[in-house]
Length: 273
Figure 1: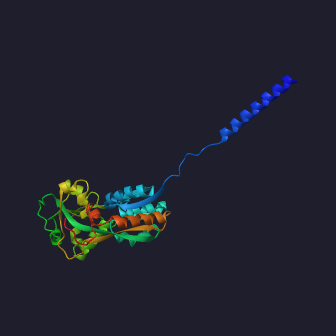
Figure 2 (figure 1 turned 45 degrees about the vertical axis):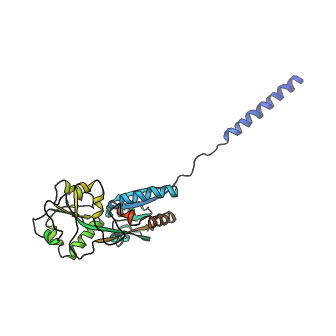
Figure 3 (figure 1 turned 90 degrees about the vertical axis):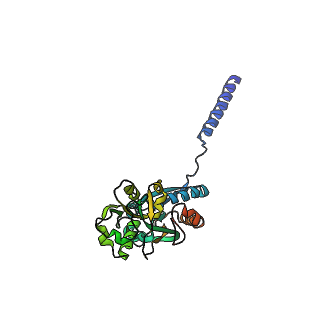
């Protein structure tokens, strides 16, 4: 009996030990942390460098991830319409705000004035053709080869058209246009590549890609207000409304004259290049 009793005791202890190990194996510690919240921002190409700078600061402070989409305004609104997602929209001028709902099906909510973008003429370094900044010079057919942005695709194109129409020159100047770009991207390159003598562009583009080494700015000789207001706005389809508003709050604090001038923008309507 004692032998049987000993065997029974050994079996019982074994079962308890293995049973305990089995239970311990089923316990799992979840070491996975919650992924950072994502903020989706759409910005026109001209705004990209400045927004990237704000993005890096914001991600560190708010422990989130910002996904940037940059393109011309028309394409950005197309992406918003078909993706049905996003939190902030930052075009190069507020023109596309007027048509945003019709083009996307969504509304713009909270908005923030960022500063001014400036319409200028750009010429090759040293202004070899001696362009004087008067639109009347561009109206002389065959005198200057001109590049500008398409009014149907970007803020720059729309503002360029409005600028020329104010001076009664749009139809005539179009006859001297050798290339219409989707937005500001490519205008400086066109001058460098001898595709044109003059381009109508945002003054801020002199500050990117080393353009100052190859391009000069000629200020328009006109009474037209070439300082164009820039705004950012929260999208009605946002899933991160509070975080989007926090981004605007940070931008309001950061975007002083000194910060904006790094990118060729300003807080005032007049600026000297």
